[in-house]
Length: 125
Image (cartoon, rainbow, N blue to C red; front, side, top):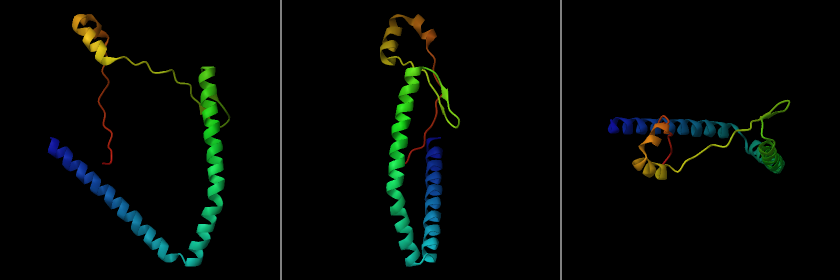
């Protein structure tokens, strides 16, 4: 089973590599069509908009932070014309190690334990 999953992961990595190669080949063909003049103009446009984009991104980040703090303080979801800031109750956590030790001498608490379903996240190494 472990070998089978490992082989599938290797196959998935191969698909990722194929996708990357396709994107590189596509960009090569696009670059071949672009004249040096067009490339220079694109670079100028990118530079012109970079500063503007950074300023807007900074404004967005600051206002998002302010809204998050306001909604937490308000204690409920707020809906605007185009966006909604969803208030989410804080998650309760327990010290599992300590509770497991406690359960050894107080097994009745085990009936209150809930175990979530396992899940998988695929990561690049």
